Amino acid sequence: MAQTFEFTVNGKPVSVALDNEEAPLLNVLRNEFGLMGTRFGCGLEQCGSCMVLIDGEPEKSCGRPTWAVAGKSITTIEGLGTRERRHPLQQAFLDEQAGQCGYCLSGILISAKALLDRNPAPSRAEIAEALDGNICRCGAHNRILRAVAKAAAAMQAGASP
Ligand code: FES
Ligand code: FES
Image (cartoon, rainbow, N blue to C red):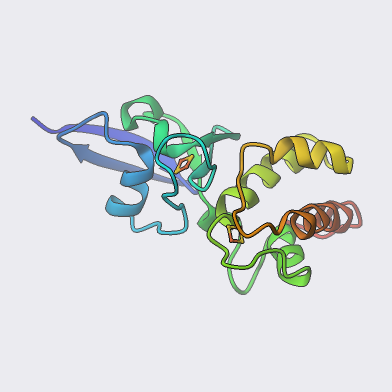
């Protein structure tokens, strides 16, 4: 029998009825809510492409059963900004062309947002440490680190998320 779970996604209350309460949050976000920005990479909590914020903490959604997020607040990449009103991180990644294929970037932007929320002026080493759970197979790491530092500086100078 299907069970219903309620939580918040990008500020909106949602509910979903599932036959399998163990269904990963990643699948539910993509298949039930059409939020295709959160990516399936390894499915084994190894690559970080499926990263979302759960109550403000970066978590790999491929390893998180949906029952475990009932009552919690989820933020996906779609909740960061829009094409018209980009989050400073999104703007900085565009400015620095910080990516090649782009597959890893949703997860990296989510991890970077969590970092800047708790540490508005991180060092390069702190940025690298915060992104340690995210793999970029294109090797865009230097540009990614530069982009996060640029976004932090922009936000310190008054750019609003
Ligand atoms: S798809 Fe979740 S960590 Fe790789
Ligand atoms: S830009 Fe291709 S995996 Fe990171």
